[in-house]
Length: 210
Image (cartoon, rainbow, N blue to C red; front, side):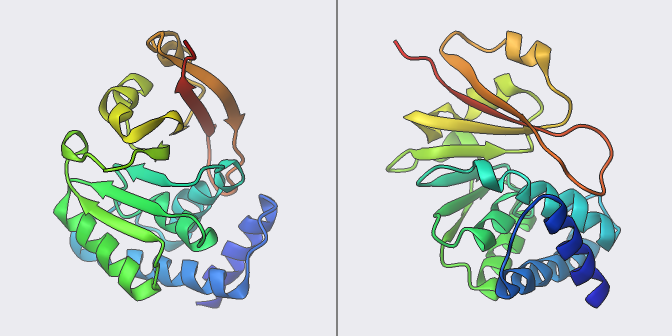
């Protein structure tokens, strides 16, 4: 619908994101799929289509300028967030979506097929049981309760020189203090997400050099 297109364009401009018409169309097609499937499969607690644009699409795309990796895995991807919006805007970047919930993985498969996302791979598996042949340059998630949990459960997925990208709300000082010595905070970026309340941060973590 035109109102969703207008809102999406407006909020993309607010975060200085320039997209092609084809990318806008793909994002809106994904948005429509999310609305449709959410009614039957309860993929997200967000029900409002307008809120889905800001809290899911724009929130996911807010990290786009900081994705500087050759391969990326989205762990606990749910309905494909942030992986699918990132894949639409970075067709050159191989992105793997990992989730253990079969309904959410089925939705990911459907979205990949309908959107023609050749750069996306969907893996239905528990994180601790998935062992890729080649580790990823980047591990991203906005689903983990704590940084410690993220590092603990995804460490085997990240290359030695790779980066862990944790999407968080408020700046988690206590969680950072509790990180193991083998992991350090490389950068913290305060994100702007139009249409949402509260703080948003992207934390970039890496292995400590020995």
